[in-house]
Length: 308
Ligand code: PPE
Image (cartoon, rainbow, N blue to C red; front, side, top):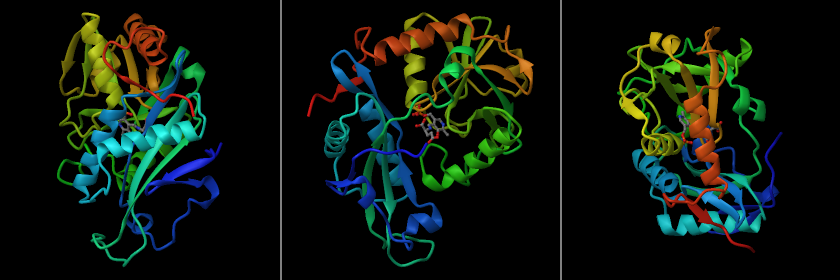
């Protein structure tokens, strides 16, 4: 379903959803010149609360820096703008999509003379891979498409154009009847999903690829690492060869949209007993307890939105 809400924040003011349009000469449309974030606000007993707003905005500014965008706002101002937009749209929970892009101006690859536009879009977005996916897990394949080599695109930046690579992997997986794809990096090591980070559990140890395997440094990934350490689970951030996926007792994907989604098979090979395992469940439960305000926010992850 197409997203929808009432207001979109655009360069400092709220404009009605239908009026938030761009010209076809916008640089971003031609060359993928945009950076973005995906953030969730959860419903808590105290109203909507934004999950890890600051780390998301920090990553947005880092992505912008890579593309040499000057964002004419401070992080504080954008944090305020996110809260204001969620409040104006009266969401009890939502997905938040800040987007910074080069707008209309001269065409040509180096877009630095085109204006930088900043928008914040919010809308209701349910479970990315479905509620059933969170409970039962999903079936995935290893994609025939690789993530970018480190000297081609900056994987650590959340840059619009780079998602064409993710689209190839996602379309291939969907056409073959799978929920998601796992992508390898240019050297053949496990990287991540088309829009999620990846974790696996083997003999009680939690593994995830480190930042030099062409991954996006997920905010959810970081939260899961924190919760795993809290639970006394041994964590290893190390390169993962493909076959370790098939050895895994548990496998799951993390992302703002996907949250913590168990994987029940890879390339048709069942993971563990084909059901979400105990460590995945424990981390999922703890994660959802904190984000929905059922457990104390001991890490300061939530920004309350307050009422209009
Ligand atoms: N890797 C990629 C490639 C990625 O796009 C995401 C987020 C992650 C990892 C996880 O990052 P984080 O959200 O900070 O935990 N993908 C976003 C876009 C999904 C979409 O389909 O659009 C998201 O989850 O919001």
